[in-house]
Image (cartoon, rainbow, N blue to C red; front, side, top):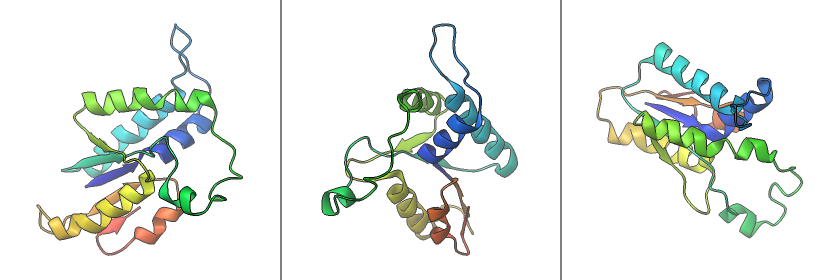
Length: 147
């Protein structure tokens, strides 16, 4: 099982690659970078299952409890956010399930999948591989979960 921290991969791709645009001016460098990572993971790991997690574009339960949660973090550029629907479009076209839930971050979804996957094993010794650039994901590492 591969679980993609989509917002993390999109963010890294957006900042790592030069601006790439379609003829109509739509910026697609984050989409391109996301797909490079996605197809490399398919080639390298040959997963039986893939899931992608996204942050829901609304306040989370954490920010409702603690107003200062990520309050000092500057918002990402609108050109990054504008590419997220395009990534979802490609995932859907490729038959990849993606998940987001109001009040939760993609990290919460990833943690849930990583903890539940071994308990719901469809394959013997199923391994979960999390694709993320977020160091917080390291807390999920165990015998069945890799980053």
